Image (cartoon, rainbow over all chains, first blue to last red; front, side):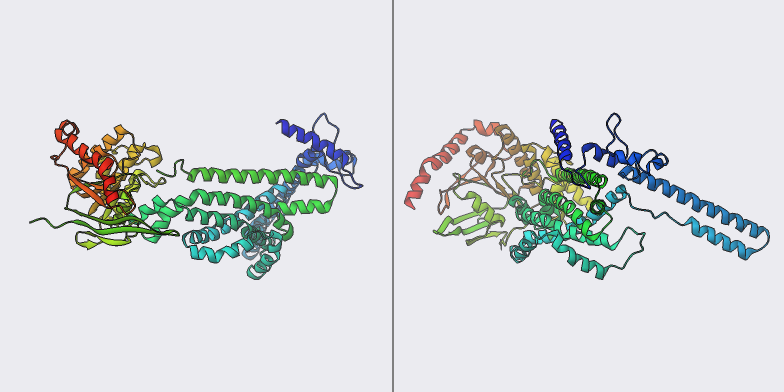
Length: 346
Length: 266
């Protein structure tokens, strides 16, 4: 707590020093405002221009939130969506009424046509801008896909490496070569693959090509810790446990499922934990480059805006990215504890 | 006429290749056992008795000589030899039940699930774990884990039972309990059993014959002492029997004196 308070104080001092003509490092209060859209009562307003500017009158329509802030923008989108749906509903009602009239007049063809129109409007959904919260979900979705594919690829290869020293020797140079590779270097290659392999989806689908590109980069970068840890885990299965398998003459499938995999699960999960950490870090960069609708794109867009308000939103994003990374790590830690037995040698 | 040997180790030897020449651990180990006989192999720590057992179990390659069980030469490890290790070697991610079932499924692959369940239940109850069948090994005490180890070996209905200092890591009271569990089970099934131990009292109490090994390198059979107590045995009767002290004296004097004379002679 004290450390955090000290951090906030240092941050305030730093932000009052680092200023350019157009932008400054946002203060803690400005960052708070950029998230919530309201100033903390009792303090000077962090963006005095915004309440005296031309947009100020619209605040009231937006529940008093600055629509340029994260929450204010989400609110504005919510209101816009509501209005859009209401107007669509009006049209639906209108056409249904016309359809009933036509039916009463005995014109079945016209009635059918109006009914069709009504159904078309009823099926419409609002495709507005992505809010910060949508982008969090898209980022999580992207990282999950990348991480999931990486796991599916890395665990079997790792098991093979652990079982067969020959295979391990063959794979080792490749692993050592690709492991330290930068995610940014992978990006263009993955981009080519997704452009070749994935048809352009409709623009309102969340399964954009950019999402797959991002996920692909995440996968390539988060593959290695899992692979290496699985290989080490499998190679270092307790000899006693392998003796049990030998004495019982277990077949290879049973040996792997019942002995080798459970015994190396703790190390596999250590690898998965490292992998998801790496994956999440890589994701932000990948999102920026691929223009996937995730947190990386949010940061990039705000950077392009370039004013203090946008920079303040980047600070919020930094905290959120860090928080989610921490949370993902905790989840993996829980799994890791679940599969680790206090006494591995009983 | 003497009964044909059920178990036979002929000129068994183990040599490890090292950069400084060959290390001969065991050499010329000969032993014959009748069906249903209980033999304890006794010797100083590090003399190579565990090496002999792991070769018989098929876990360690045989460098020299051969092992015959029921007239057939062994090749590698197989569930026809139930092994109880010094550490119980249970799989910590499986329940007690599943640990025993793993072996039962391998041996009784033609049996129905119902029959297998009965086998597992029978042996777990027989070692006194009727209440702990679905616990994880981590929840059990050391003695209870080794009971599972015994149940797992017996449940295979092996041709031979191989025990590698199974009670070496237990305290004395638990050891007594488990010796009793082992003897009770053995009395029912009369498996041909070879047990490695360095506990003289344990050897006398359990064995029909005690085989004493010379010290390594190149360990072999030193002396064999026949233990002539009736079965089923009772610990108190045996300990108050004058023969008990005689056997004890014989074993200890070998381990303390004659073994060194034999080493010098060799």
